[in-house]
Image (cartoon, rainbow, N blue to C red):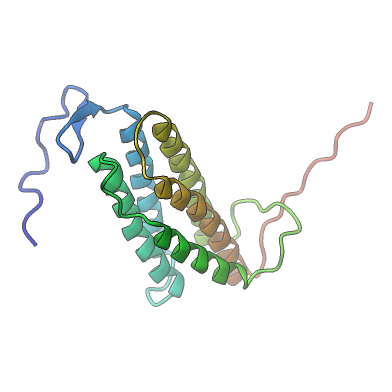
Length: 188
């Protein structure tokens, strides 16, 4: 592999713009950059979550593959070319298969689940919420510019998978999940 970066700073963004992989420059607050930033943040959170898991844990292996998918998805967003797609229906189907396998281990939901349960479960919940934000940003971008529709579907499915991961981790780590205890409305 050749060197991709010979210098970390370029000074190109000093005036509030950044370069896309296709060579064009956009404002750092452009919806494409917002979506890219949220995908990057999500990838970082998955890295943090992995540090809370044993290295030989099957969930850690799953999260590492997802991190690679997220990097590919970020590449699609950075290239900004409708003909450049890496996230396909087959990638989404793989994610759904993994999601179904994890969900089969769990009892049906009876109540809403609160984020928490264990440090790893809480990190999975945080990653899920950032994934939802990344999905929202991708949808906003897709309304204005070309975005691979499968990338949006992938983010939607990934947030579901992360919710299930949080449930699995909470039950595995503490034996239970934190259930919402709603207040009852006051009667006048």
